Length: 313
Image 1 (cartoon, rainbow, N blue to C red):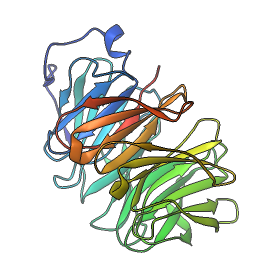
Image 2 (image 1 turned 180 degrees about the vertical axis):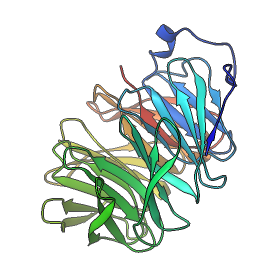
Image 3 (image 1 turned 120 degrees about the vertical axis):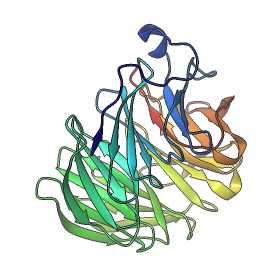
């Protein structure tokens, strides 16, 4: 069900011009604060946007400015315009939407209560398809060139492969224990999977749908991001307050950066020069230079940041 909104959206702080809003490189969603904040590499960029209670994850559309924020406890998705800093839509979704990924016309969310992948019309908010993808799916990525979705089943220790056109599961790959976040190489050939409980990173060959490798990375790997050139993969380690960066081909460590307490989501800026890490227990985001492998800044955010999205630059 689509919830109509008044023309004026609820925005915290003073409205910004579109030019200023576009300076932000990242958007962070804070679960306890119920807000989306906008960050440059050095600090906060203007007004944050108030959304519904207990937001979980965030995804950015292909335009680089439309943000989709999931609320699993409320069965809702909030749509935010990152340039105007306004809430533009609210969609009710049956179940508990968590992971999200979008095309120009459709939004896909994992429902970790009912074990399904849900397809939503991005204009109307209507549900247009549902398919079972395991016991408790969390992380989600799309490969639009091949018309696929990959969903991590945290309780089934597997990744489901879905044909988006047919909305049919076409494969399942066993990985480590409690897979959560996913990162896809730019060519779509490799899928990186953070296995929280087994402390390792799985690499899936997406052509043969087999696990190519599994390498230890540290205690409680949670978030995953792949650089646009496909050469590096970044993984957050919740219990070590660290970000580890690996060579994507060799799976050898290139750097280990100290970040805030209990890091969760990680994303890489559109230009590939820096990564942002959401430190859930510290109410902060760490910006990391991927060239020097050093922390550039620690930015305070509304309470409980969990996930981030990279904005168009």
